[in-house]
Image 1 (tube, rainbow, N blue to C red):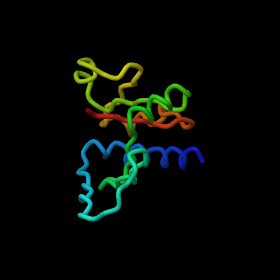
Image 2 (image 1 turned 45 degrees about the horizontal axis):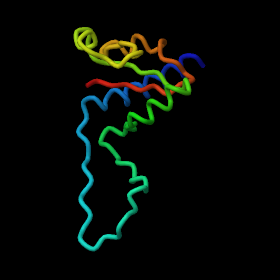
Image 3 (image 1 turned 30 degrees about the vertical axis):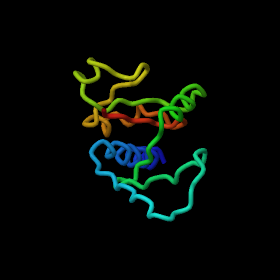
Image 4 (image 1 turned 90 degrees about the horizontal axis):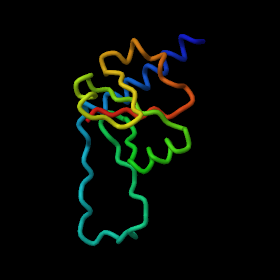
Length: 114
């Protein structure tokens, strides 16, 4: 059971990390005569080529304030040392598979690479 859980977590992390190297599909512009959408309406979620969900800064801040997320910086040590998000944990993308046990199971894992 533990191995299955680790495998699932590894797959999730792999998909999340692939966002760093993905090419996103861009949405086409609306044709003339399209209905007007109110400015307070939430836009439809864009589907990215890698399938990884994107999250906004306000969403991250809210999850962090509630203790429901952790931030993982998947860049290398020199990049992390130059600047990083306060509280982020450095786990370079090349080490994720070996360090998967360090990822919490009860929180949203937010990775970033730039």
